[in-house]
Length: 97
Image 1: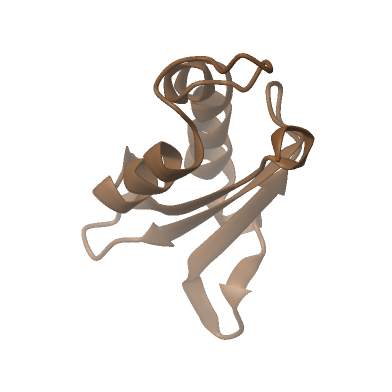
Image 2: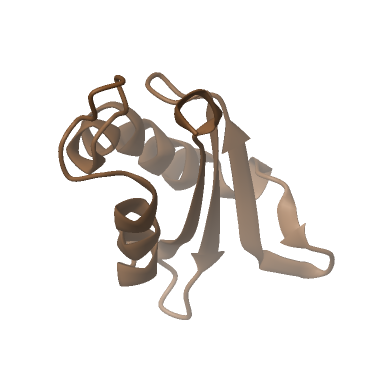
């Protein structure tokens, strides 16, 4: 189980490094409060998550509500070495946009 550089680039693009004046969570907040739950879902239930692309079972998607954010979608892929990699993150930032 590992998160890729693309996952963290998505995180950095969507959230600031420091908590915002309007209560916007920071990248660190997301990692502390959301990421562990995401990793657990992919690590334990990868095969139970819906396929992102029909007939491409190596790509799965998790769409969930968050503790700090209203919701998020994470794409994971089964790598050739058997590890699950988090490759994409989209966060619902509606309250702060």
